[in-house]
Structure formats: C-alpha cells, structure tokens
Image 1 (cartoon, rainbow, N blue to C red):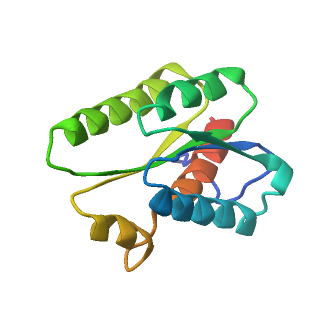
Image 2 (cartoon, one colour):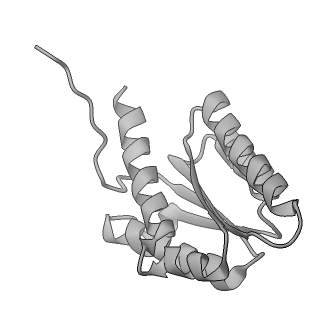
Length: 154
C-alpha cells in the first residue's frame, strides 16, 4: 500500500512568527492583515502569533533566521513588497530575499514561507494584497500551517 503524508490546514497549538517589512507599508499591512485573519480562521489564538516589523525587505531574512533558530515557532512567514523602479535595486533585493528565505529552509528545521510580493507595478501589488488576485499574506499563512503540520508528521 502506498503511504501518503499530507499536511492539514490547521493552526494547531504551534506559534507563528510573521516578519513584515515597513517599506511599502500600505501594501505590507494588507498582507499582514490577511495572514493574521487566515491564521485565526484556522484556529490560532492571539498568543500564538508574533509580528516583527523590520525596516525593509532585505532585513526580513536575518530576523526570520534568528526566529527560526530559536525553535519557538512552527513556521515563519516572511511578508514584504518589492515594486520595480527605474534602477537595478529591485533585482538585487528580489535575489537577496529569495536566496535568504531559501537558505533558511535548507538549513533550519522551521519552515520559512516566502510571502514577498515582487511586482512590476504598484497596481500588481495592490491586486495581490487583497483585491482581484486574493491576498498573498493569507496564502502564506495557509502554506505556513500546512508545512508546519506536514513537517510534524514526517
């Protein structure tokens, strides 16, 4: 018989850390609201959720790493919004944050969820922060719960 392991969409009793960038806060605050709402709808209590604000997107990674290393959290959600400008800064920030979150996932037992919007335009960011395209913060929360549960079963 084939054994199948699936994570459940439930907050369970674990704690969740949300690292959110203040840069583009008009977008990231919507992502944060979506993430908290999703966690609570799936059973998380206020005391299970820790929110850590950082200045910018690049600063998400070292804070997320420290939280992951602490062993206190079932999952770490990384929320930010990078919108392309007229310089190559966008490319550098996107590469750094994606590499950093990936490295946490390879090196730590705690999953880090990539909930960072990388958009060409402000309109795209707005759409992904709770309008036409749903809320990427809520999607990150769902992934965090599923991964935390899945990893606890393996």
